[in-house]
Image 1: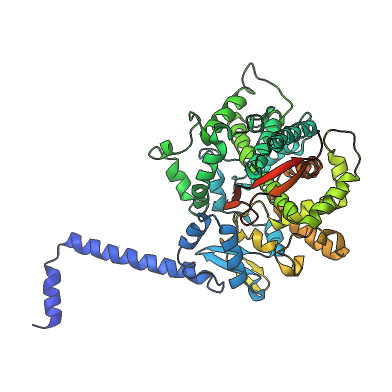
Image 2: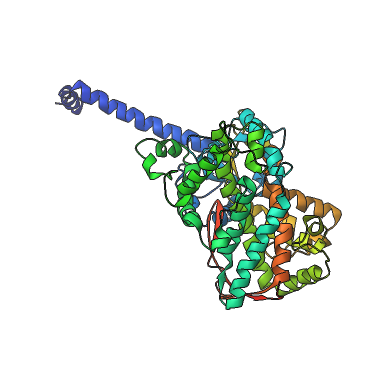
Length: 508
């Protein structure tokens, strides 16, 4: 009997259902292999980490590692080149760039690029979108137009005095540590300050982090524990639906929780409910402005949660990192203090209008934003269906292009050979053309074009004040110069164990 006859006889004994199942399995394997190859082939001209073109594993591992901002930077340095416009491949359908001109092209007002599925992971309430997570352009524009007045401060009563009040509370807390000659974790206290500011502006009362000198409701602790999972959902967006299903919903924060983010959700819901209904409270804070311009109760709840997270962590990061550089670079510290000493004002806290006119302070603020950009997530945008060409290189439609903040703000062709150094003087010494280039790149800190951060005016007002009052009131020294702090990044930064000693400079 021939081998063909033997095979025919063997197959004849196989039940049809098994044969069909085998053929189906073979088809699925073949289809999967062809799909994977086709996906790889679309972006094969862009280089990146091994196997990144076939799987999202590199991205998943990186965003959950705590050092994604550095890994992204290494990838663009290693694989980006002039021919492809400093673009590296980091996933089957994912590119990453440290080219500020490409990012401005992607983000400009008339862009055809759209938010990618990355933003689905920004829904803090899985059932409701917010200004950051909306991918529908019309919905995003409508929501943005309703919220711009509140974020801009035009309809927030006593906006600047509220910031001043919380700065004075921060100074009072630090003075307690100075009087007791105790080391203080400045990283945590800076976040206490920004959380109290944003809650005071958002719904009329600070949470009380500064007053109690504690992580109220363990909000910071639980948020930091949750962030790695949040970043994974930006890479695998369908996980948002899975986690919000009845099976897994009990694992998510709930408004009924006694502590953590769930507790803050409950507070946001309760405060928002007071602004609706027959006995609604009308107040001139951010929430009041949102309601007056037509936000629904659910929309208002989602936006309050976003404000607390996005409005506190990012500003705290800038304050912490800038203070670290000021304390550890005596030349810069002394120059800023000299400028402060020559500045006269009668108010308890420097007015925003005065701070804006101090040239070295403004250089310090800009350099602080540049040297440690507070947001290092991909924030990927999707190439329009027809594709796009950049520096002669075609990028297929539907491709995601992410933002490498650390790379953009350390490019030597923009910032000079000392791009890795904290040197505010670069903002005062540059030619008009170079200054224009630098400021154009720095604009990306607050995003750009149609997606520019609405909270920019409030954040800059805080920065125009806080360094002046800290240096006017205290001398600072690092407790352990060899390990000044602990840093963990999951899109935004956790910077803690930043222990300093403070010594009062006046009886203030």
